[in-house]
Image (tube, rainbow, N blue to C red; front, top):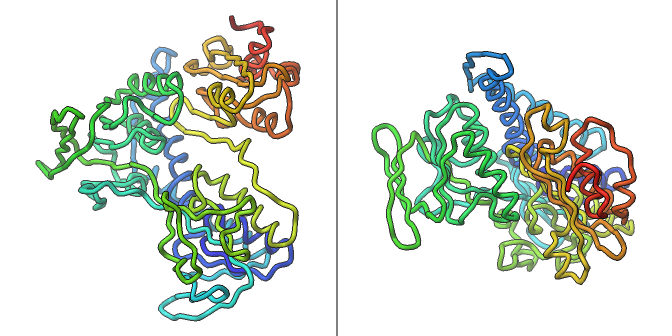
Length: 458
């Protein structure tokens, strides 16, 4: 089996296939662990932690704790790089331990059972019975705002800054834009976010967006909603960005640099899919079946190139299913309980259906909600913004989904994801004793609220 791309989809697929006894070759042209581990999920969370430490120390005077904070971003980035190196080395070691043949190079298809690999300037061919393509995604470029590493930055540049910028314009209030805006604001940057939609995180419910926007505003982040970044120019060792409203009104914003985070595009143009007769769809993704199989029975696609949601854990899950399917196991993809998280302040985590989606799917939804302001643990850690919400089918009590805006929401979501996966009910969640005092009690209370039995909310 040939695996192209060693991100969270590719390396997991390779290891799982090797566990099944397959002869596996994994080809990676950049870095083991892919974008997530090297330039996304892990390094950004390391900087999130650094930003939190700096901000909490700087703003704890009301607790009787006074501190002058000096942020050496270069040292913070070095620490972040050490974590990345440790994990990428771990991925490489796991692959080798499983018996995967690792090749540093770029692979593309020659025909349905032969690939060409360019490694260290030398080209060789490799025959394969099965292939899994996991080439991931790249930042979406905005015309006129192509990254130059100096005045125009992308998310990867933002994670490698040597100094904290005095000011920054961020184009895009999606999950990447809001995560990085929050980090930089906590490190001391004056941040202005330009967003063409009318709120942050436009893919989420309004009450979730409101929690994140209000907290970001408290951190000093300014927002320009309903405006499009139209052009930029270098001026006075910085940039001036021209924004335009739908009515044509132009505003000029000045900063040290502009960070463009407009989304990501699947990478389907590097492996020569034409040689296989495989064509991406209108969204640029490769169509696959419930096992990750493309139009060719022996070629699979997993991760970002297989379509939304572009999540590392989704890629790993799809990689395992594809490898199992190739090994003859009865594995199929089930995205009904696919969690997602945004590491803003507070975090946002969702899984399954919203109330509206449940109604559209034919359920009779009932919703329970618990505000973090009513949770003792949230108050003691000064993180009482947000709520936990559970959606269920009223006649059966079966849990269908959840939306959480809260500290550690990414962790709180797991038990609800398990509940959906196992077909558990509101009564089973509400009847499970949760440790006190913990944030997880909000999940129990939300389930009880949906049943009309909540003790600590009304």
